[in-house]
Length: 298
Image (cartoon, rainbow, N blue to C red; front, side, top):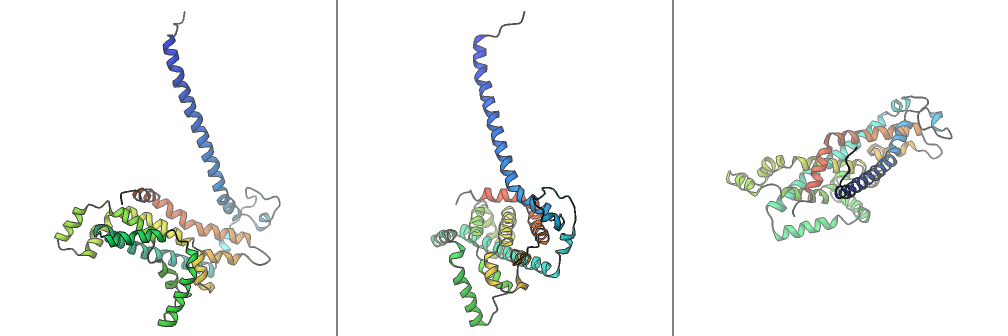
């Protein structure tokens, strides 16, 4: 004869079962929602990648095919012309050069603002943060006029040059904000010890500070490089000749007035996003650390 469960024990077990069941339902709904959003965001990438390996006749088929029935790499081979390689070179010079300059200025300004703190420095920082709220489109015309004035006054070419594309980004407000928050994590004792050893401002910055903020530097490399890699508006204003076009402008060359080279366009798009994906895979853990540091004291 089976043992009878005590009434009090049965009453206490029912709420626990109900809580676990509720948690399981919540998790199922949450994961289903995340999976749905992931599929929605991933589908455009899937469509571009599969379209780049379809034959031209299949690309124009109605209704479209979800999976390539005829696999080919002719678009990926044909897209690599000298002009397309020039677009890649321009993009890496623009994004890479901007990233290096932003790393130097942001870390130096952040170091001075935190370790040589003053009322003027705090006001300057709040002014820099306030500029983050101003849309770039509102001052793009004055910025273009400034480059023209430099050209006419000093005879220094700015339009259709790498310097004209990079120099306006010398001081990046978000980079300064990120580095200022990171500098709070460096103990003042290390800075004082470097001063006692006779190190100057730049020597302390280079030998003591930079090695301690490598994680944030890596995160900022990703932020700035991707931001400039995808930039369209400023290169559209400065680069008026196709020889200076980055990839964002070069991709438009595959779109004609009466016909679009869908195969070459999708293959060029896949080639354009590959460097960003590879970069993100190698430094993704630094992105999380860098974002976490922005929430430190300030």
